[in-house]
Length: 452
Image (cartoon, rainbow, N blue to C red):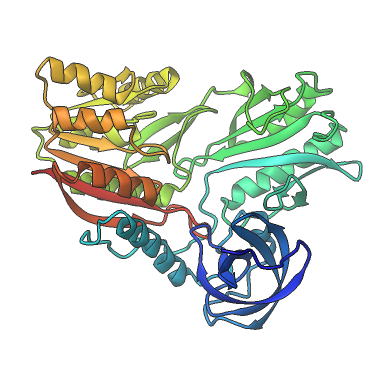
């Protein structure tokens, strides 16, 4: 394919044919693909080219000549431009169709054309759902400023309403920002690696209302830090305040040093009637309403009778395993992060659950040991990271052969790959996409596999 004569900053009229998995419009110029921000299928747009690579390029919509009937007008374009809500210009019912289609496309690519993909389970109100914010802080025009980065850049766009976050979190970020300004604390200067506050993280427990604030600073020396601590803790909803020190030139948010400045070490929240303790580094699903729907669906697909040995792989702080413990004979959670296992053990005690244990290790290593000792697994729950299941775990599953596997996936491409690898041993049930992240291109899915 010969690349057409396209240049950066060139203005061009484009007809949008499709949406990419990232939610960008797809246009062709002499078979050369351009991915276009803020453009929908069926639209004709005036655009400016922002980057040209060897096999594809990027462009940004300047104005829409012919508009899609699926375009939304009453949401500020800044949410799409910063990447906070890249699908916010698309009607919500069409977002749900787009996400189901992503699963279908990935399954078809790998030859799983006969697998039934159900409609996407959406939200009644697809805004203000996030229970956690990690908001970058910069010094702009002499002022400590909070906001979000423009897409594919580190240019901070000042912002107070984040659209998809719990409004109480947005309010708390403004309060913390103003307290820091009052005491002349400087925001981070990334270019010169100077200044202090890099990030403000706020978590708010949906069912208890408890909040945790973490100030991520380049240095541990913050003037008036006692006054700042007292003023932040003056909000009765803030139960925990930490200082995290990250002096490295890195995109990783947290440094190693985490100091409790005031309050408890954790906040409490509930999922399906169980209480969980959440510390600053805990993995905890960010959409509390859909998390309950996701877990209910996964537990229903497990079809537990109370007699099963269940393994909860990638168990984190135990949320899935403990949610189904009352329906199983015994639950074993396996997690590679030691602190998460300690949290899971604590959460089991907190909820009076005695038929669940958690072990540190890789799932494939633990299952291989079980297979050697002729131990069996009735139901395996897996909720892996985006890269999916390791090949060694696929091999372990073929050895120990759980009667049923319930797979919760956050990446349809790796889900399709893993199901294909297991399809000679397991019958694949219907797949249900769940919209855990409305207004974004991300999609979770749940599927049960039954041993042939």
